[in-house]
View 1 (cartoon, one colour):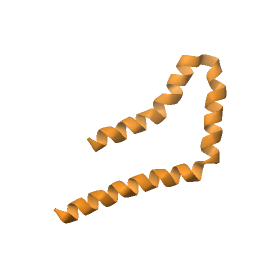
View 2: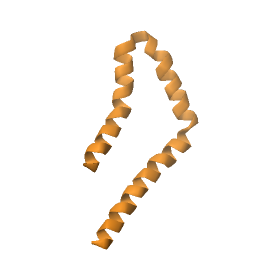
View 3: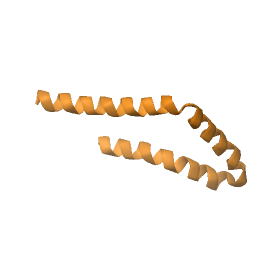
Length: 68
């Protein structure tokens, strides 16, 4: 179940720009450009959030293994 959730979350990151490009055509350049600027500006916070989620998952798995 957890693998399915991670797969869906990962696919959103790839599918969103593709869907916006296909749906909006040339108008998508402004939206995608603003997304790129936001991600570049908030790169550190995004990476901290990703690593915190992965750390929590690994910690939970470790505790579950030790308590079994």
